[in-house]
Amino acid sequence: MGLARASLLNYERLGLLRPAERNAAGYRLYGDAEFERVRAIRRFREAGLPLATICDLFKPRSSNREGSPAALLEARLFELCGEVNRLREQQKLLARLLATPALRKEHACADKESWVALLRRAGLDDGQMRQWHASFEKESPAEHAAFLRSLGLAGNEVAKIRRRSTAAGE
Image (cartoon, rainbow, N blue to C red):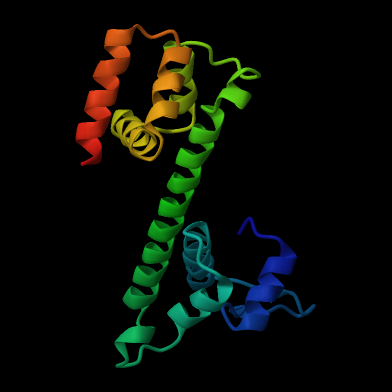
Protein backbone atom coordinates (compact mmCIF):
# COMPACT_ATOMS: atom_id res chain seq x y z
CA MET A 1 0.00 0.00 0.00
CA GLY A 2 2.95 2.31 0.55
CA LEU A 3 1.33 3.84 3.61
CA ALA A 4 2.70 4.14 7.10
CA ARG A 5 1.23 1.81 9.69
CA ALA A 6 0.19 4.82 11.78
CA SER A 7 -1.82 6.17 8.85
CA LEU A 8 -3.57 2.84 8.34
CA LEU A 9 -4.43 2.69 12.04
CA ASN A 10 -5.65 6.28 11.95
CA TYR A 11 -7.83 5.57 8.90
CA GLU A 12 -9.22 2.55 10.71
CA ARG A 13 -9.88 4.58 13.87
CA LEU A 14 -11.76 7.19 11.80
CA GLY A 15 -13.81 4.52 10.05
CA LEU A 16 -12.27 5.23 6.65
CA LEU A 17 -10.72 1.79 6.24
CA ARG A 18 -11.32 -1.67 7.57
CA PRO A 19 -9.08 -4.67 6.93
CA ALA A 20 -10.68 -7.33 4.75
CA GLU A 21 -9.72 -9.89 7.38
CA ARG A 22 -7.09 -10.83 9.92
CA ASN A 23 -4.74 -13.76 9.72
CA ALA A 24 -4.18 -16.29 12.50
CA ALA A 25 -1.52 -14.07 14.09
CA GLY A 26 -3.94 -11.13 14.16
CA TYR A 27 -2.31 -9.16 11.35
CA ARG A 28 -4.59 -7.04 9.22
CA LEU A 29 -5.04 -8.20 5.65
CA TYR A 30 -6.20 -5.91 2.88
CA GLY A 31 -7.68 -6.81 -0.47
CA ASP A 32 -8.22 -5.00 -3.75
CA ALA A 33 -11.23 -3.06 -2.45
CA GLU A 34 -9.19 -1.73 0.47
CA PHE A 35 -6.31 -0.79 -1.83
CA GLU A 36 -8.76 1.16 -4.02
CA ARG A 37 -10.15 2.88 -0.93
CA VAL A 38 -6.64 3.91 0.16
CA ARG A 39 -5.95 5.23 -3.36
CA ALA A 40 -9.14 7.31 -3.17
CA ILE A 41 -8.23 8.61 0.31
CA ARG A 42 -4.77 9.59 -0.95
CA ARG A 43 -6.23 11.40 -3.99
CA PHE A 44 -8.54 13.38 -1.73
CA ARG A 45 -5.64 14.18 0.63
CA GLU A 46 -3.53 15.34 -2.34
CA ALA A 47 -6.45 17.63 -3.26
CA GLY A 48 -6.11 19.17 0.20
CA LEU A 49 -9.18 17.67 1.80
CA PRO A 50 -8.97 17.14 5.56
CA LEU A 51 -9.65 13.65 6.86
CA ALA A 52 -12.94 14.78 8.45
CA THR A 53 -14.22 15.82 5.00
CA ILE A 54 -12.99 12.57 3.48
CA CYS A 55 -14.95 10.71 6.15
CA ASP A 56 -18.03 12.67 5.06
CA LEU A 57 -17.35 11.74 1.43
CA PHE A 58 -17.47 8.05 2.29
CA LYS A 59 -20.63 8.26 4.39
CA PRO A 60 -23.77 6.88 2.82
CA ARG A 61 -25.27 9.51 0.53
CA SER A 62 -28.12 11.55 1.84
CA SER A 63 -30.71 13.49 -0.09
CA ASN A 64 -29.20 16.64 1.42
CA ARG A 65 -27.22 18.41 -1.35
CA GLU A 66 -24.99 20.17 1.22
CA GLY A 67 -23.46 16.90 2.37
CA SER A 68 -23.15 15.31 -1.04
CA PRO A 69 -19.68 14.41 -2.33
CA ALA A 70 -20.00 16.92 -5.17
CA ALA A 71 -20.94 19.71 -2.75
CA LEU A 72 -17.99 18.88 -0.48
CA LEU A 73 -15.59 18.90 -3.43
CA GLU A 74 -17.09 22.15 -4.74
CA ALA A 75 -16.63 23.73 -1.32
CA ARG A 76 -12.95 22.74 -1.33
CA LEU A 77 -12.54 24.09 -4.86
CA PHE A 78 -14.01 27.45 -3.79
CA GLU A 79 -11.76 27.48 -0.70
CA LEU A 80 -8.75 26.94 -2.98
CA CYS A 81 -9.88 29.74 -5.29
CA GLY A 82 -10.03 32.05 -2.28
CA GLU A 83 -6.60 30.91 -1.11
CA VAL A 84 -5.14 31.42 -4.59
CA ASN A 85 -6.62 34.93 -4.74
CA ARG A 86 -5.19 35.76 -1.30
CA LEU A 87 -1.79 34.42 -2.36
CA ARG A 88 -1.88 36.44 -5.58
CA GLU A 89 -2.63 39.58 -3.58
CA GLN A 90 0.30 38.78 -1.27
CA GLN A 91 2.45 38.17 -4.35
CA LYS A 92 1.54 41.60 -5.75
CA LEU A 93 2.22 43.25 -2.40
CA LEU A 94 5.62 41.59 -2.10
CA ALA A 95 6.53 42.74 -5.60
CA ARG A 96 5.41 46.26 -4.67
CA LEU A 97 7.51 46.13 -1.52
CA LEU A 98 10.52 44.96 -3.52
CA ALA A 99 9.97 47.92 -5.84
CA THR A 100 10.26 50.49 -3.03
CA PRO A 101 13.39 52.64 -3.19
CA ALA A 102 14.69 51.56 0.23
CA LEU A 103 14.63 47.88 -0.67
CA ARG A 104 15.72 48.38 -4.28
CA LYS A 105 19.10 49.66 -3.10
CA GLU A 106 19.76 46.25 -1.52
CA HIS A 107 18.19 44.19 -4.27
CA ALA A 108 19.98 42.73 -7.26
CA CYS A 109 17.23 43.55 -9.79
CA ALA A 110 18.80 46.68 -11.22
CA ASP A 111 17.32 46.48 -14.72
CA LYS A 112 14.14 45.56 -16.54
CA GLU A 113 15.34 42.09 -17.57
CA SER A 114 16.30 41.02 -14.04
CA TRP A 115 13.02 42.42 -12.65
CA VAL A 116 10.94 40.57 -15.25
CA ALA A 117 12.95 37.39 -14.55
CA LEU A 118 12.21 37.74 -10.82
CA LEU A 119 8.48 38.14 -11.46
CA ARG A 120 8.49 35.16 -13.84
CA ARG A 121 10.25 33.02 -11.22
CA ALA A 122 7.52 34.14 -8.82
CA GLY A 123 4.98 32.71 -11.29
CA LEU A 124 3.56 35.90 -12.83
CA ASP A 125 2.64 35.80 -16.48
CA ASP A 126 2.43 38.83 -18.80
CA GLY A 127 -1.19 39.55 -17.88
CA GLN A 128 -0.46 39.42 -14.16
CA MET A 129 2.53 41.72 -14.62
CA ARG A 130 0.31 44.19 -16.47
CA GLN A 131 -2.21 44.01 -13.60
CA TRP A 132 0.60 44.58 -11.11
CA HIS A 133 1.74 47.67 -13.01
CA ALA A 134 -1.86 48.93 -13.28
CA SER A 135 -2.38 48.53 -9.54
CA PHE A 136 0.96 50.20 -8.76
CA GLU A 137 0.17 53.09 -11.13
CA LYS A 138 -3.32 53.58 -9.69
CA GLU A 139 -2.24 53.50 -6.05
CA SER A 140 1.06 55.32 -6.30
CA PRO A 141 1.78 56.92 -9.68
CA ALA A 142 4.89 58.84 -8.57
CA GLU A 143 6.43 55.74 -6.95
CA HIS A 144 5.59 53.67 -10.02
CA ALA A 145 7.31 56.19 -12.29
CA ALA A 146 10.34 56.33 -9.98
CA PHE A 147 10.50 52.53 -9.93
CA LEU A 148 10.40 52.33 -13.73
CA ARG A 149 13.15 54.93 -14.02
CA SER A 150 15.22 53.02 -11.46
CA LEU A 151 15.23 50.07 -13.87
CA GLY A 152 17.09 52.25 -16.33
CA LEU A 153 14.16 52.65 -18.72
CA ALA A 154 14.14 55.57 -21.10
CA GLY A 155 11.56 58.29 -20.54
CA ASN A 156 9.47 57.28 -23.55
CA GLU A 157 9.33 53.64 -22.35
CA VAL A 158 8.35 54.78 -18.82
CA ALA A 159 5.58 56.92 -20.33
CA LYS A 160 4.39 54.04 -22.53
CA ILE A 161 4.21 51.61 -19.59
CA ARG A 162 2.40 54.19 -17.45
CA ARG A 163 -0.16 54.92 -20.20
CA ARG A 164 -0.79 51.21 -20.70
CA SER A 165 -1.05 50.73 -16.92
CA THR A 166 -3.53 53.59 -16.58
CA ALA A 167 -5.66 52.20 -19.40
CA ALA A 168 -5.57 48.70 -17.88
CA GLY A 169 -6.60 50.00 -14.46
CA GLU A 170 -9.74 51.72 -15.77
